[in-house]
Length: 250
Ligand code: ADP
Ligand code: MG
Ligand code: MG
Image (cartoon, helix red, strand yellow):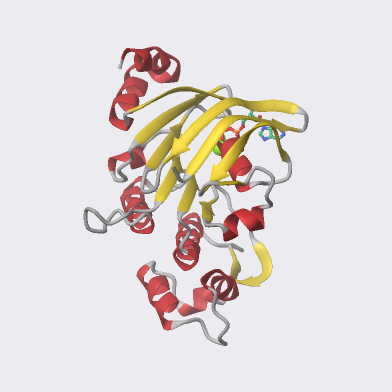
């Protein structure tokens, strides 16, 4: 098991947002987290990343067999957890170029040709790499630069918080292709893929990214889990509330 979350409860500003969270992700699996706005999806994302204001009051998080519940964000990232934020902050005074070098473990003056090639593939040119991270980037540029950073970092487990939100519908498929590349979905059968947790509000992106299991978060609890196609069908027919009842029938 790559990630084991057991009986997790999280408070923000003294208010309990998540409780009774059990989630187990094996090596090579991608799980999807669905749920209405305000159900606690981003709170779970931030808690797994270890942001201090997300106070874990019960339960534990085990990653690669090691208890990471009390580790800092930096320590978790070093252990192989990568993230793509829904709305990543701008970092004034830090060039994307320099951030990529740190993430890729490079010490040279120039960014490596390998990273430059990846940037070009993502339609981010050399001039773009000289800009401050996310400062004045368009929505699409923000998402592509997040993907490029993850390609530099090569984490074993990647969490995406609503990567499809704010992206034009015709670009969702392109974004999904990039997510598939990051998760090694394009590798030959039998080769181990990376693991992921994909948070999405509406699930349209699931037409293009294959997932193993879907979980529905409602009021800070996992209300049901199941086959992603079946869960999505239930949500489309019955809404989030109804899908919980349907889930029990599968
Ligand atoms: P989702 O990502 O599913 O839309 P969130 O995790 O952002 O949901 O929010 C879950 C709940 O936690 C909401 O009721 C929200 O108002 C509350 N919440 C989120 N962040 C904070 C915060 N910083 N302070 C207080 N409440 C918060
Ligand atoms: Mg939301
Ligand atoms: Mg959210």
